Image 1 (tube, rainbow, N blue to C red):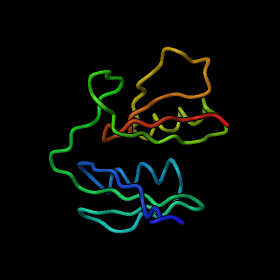
Image 2 (cartoon, rainbow, N blue to C red):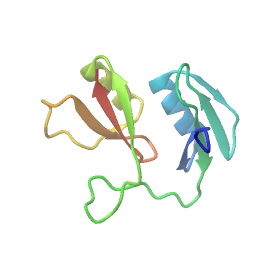
Image 3 (cartoon, rainbow, N blue to C red):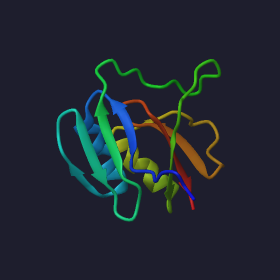
Length: 119
């Protein structure tokens, strides 16, 4: 028997509303709240939350000497279309060297790494 149930994935960031809006455009869902804590309810998915962190320092990727802490894998049907969409929303490509594989690495507007992974 599990000891706990995962409530939400929480990302520290400088602007919770802006980052929640980014992920709402990427994943769909409803943004709730404002200020230091903003929730994103994702249809059929795990809830996300965004917490203000005034001294937020984005993870480095790739950085063999520094840990990225975590990253999100987001499953997509059309890798090229999804890439175009996340870049238009403010994501930054972190890995553009190998275009033959079925995943690509980006940073969200606050610098958190995430991957788009083709089905």
